[in-house]
Image 1 (cartoon, rainbow, N blue to C red):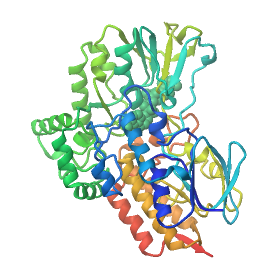
Image 2 (cartoon, rainbow, N blue to C red):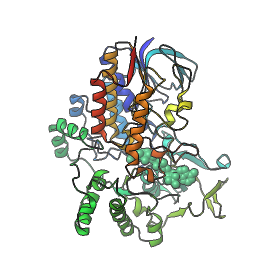
Image 3 (cartoon, rainbow, N blue to C red):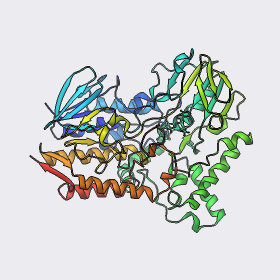
Image 4 (cartoon, protein in one colour):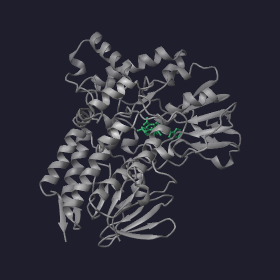
Length: 524
Ligand code: N01
């Protein structure tokens, strides 16, 4: 019997193991993949890169680690982040308590948690920590006929470790979210011809990625503590000065100049963080959205393609914008074709490629599905988690997730969800949110000393209503996004993350703890 079982060995699971060990607890990590790294283990598609700067998308818990590790680029690529996480696993001697290649399929509470793996192994622990990530279950391909395809196909979220050779190939990419936007320019460099099947255009900004100068690294390291505490005081967990003005308070020229500065900064918050009301006021948002569309018109030579690539269906920022390296410019290449599958939807995959309902046929050697994930709840409901009364989390969340603080669920004692629905999670720099959650859970376990904890129905109801109300006061629900569950057929439309920001959220979590874990029932 362990004190805790942790599911997942990504950023969350690695840190959770380190913290729980530090408390003297016996913890074991179960990881389905053949290596550590979570999302950075699976997402090896060409161009995969983080959209938060490397110096901020990294652990803050160890000042020694901060000082030793040298990031080479402003935005870290997947191989570098994976190397970092492997280094963390070695440096903190984590591997001896991580069981790789072991998928957890079920967990049942009966005084403690009894966990079953895919191979039928059963293990028990007092506490269960789900560190399964928010974007770890790829959506199945929703188009008919894939089995008949004679070529090669891959999902960006399950990319083969040996890589894919596109040289001279006729390649089709379905999907233009972050994964499509990052991979399309790189695939275009290699492919004989690339066809991009776009259903909905997305806002994307140039990353202005590049090598990290040694003097920048030195300056960051010299004031790391300050930088981290600034990040924790922001809305998004990305260190930046807070906006102080409404976009509608300033004149057109001043606003354009401010957006231009934000554009050139190469950051998720460069434009979105420019004014206070971009995510709450449609008229304010329109000014930023139109600025980005004007940039797309400048970058894309063909006016028809430029219009097709210009998002008009959702306010800017209500889907996570992408940071790209040459995305829009890729459509100026003679060997790249943009196909609008909103106008003429994909009918089926055929033996030789893809056919649309309008009867157009595209011959392809390789198909790439950059079609996204069953986000936020997918990895939690994929495991048959059954609480105190035998009821499953899957059933309990049928109409949408209900949690207390995104950390716990009523009816599921001693279960913790790292960056669960109802917490800032995907709206933030994930590492900031992960560390805050793991620290909170570790402090809670130290307080419990083996006792049982369960969120009360009343606290969960109040929190779920608060998450909904805060979300409803923003423009987020105006988008058919994966934040809303809108990308998965049949998934309830609920705005799942907490939009109150990481600073306020941390304060609320700390207050709950300071009041003896208010909203939880503690027994034993
Ligand atoms: O997935 P997405 P993603 N037929 O869901 C299209 C993070 N991330 O993997 O909008 C045709 O955003 C779909 O079209 P539509 C980041 O948080 C981060 O790109 O449904 N098209 C859309 O264009 C991101 O937001 C990084 O009309 C179909 C695309 O596929 C999140 O992961 C990098 C379709 C899916 O876009 C998810 O990004 C990568 C169908 N049946 C990812 N089904 C970083 O930079 C879906 N689509 C850190």
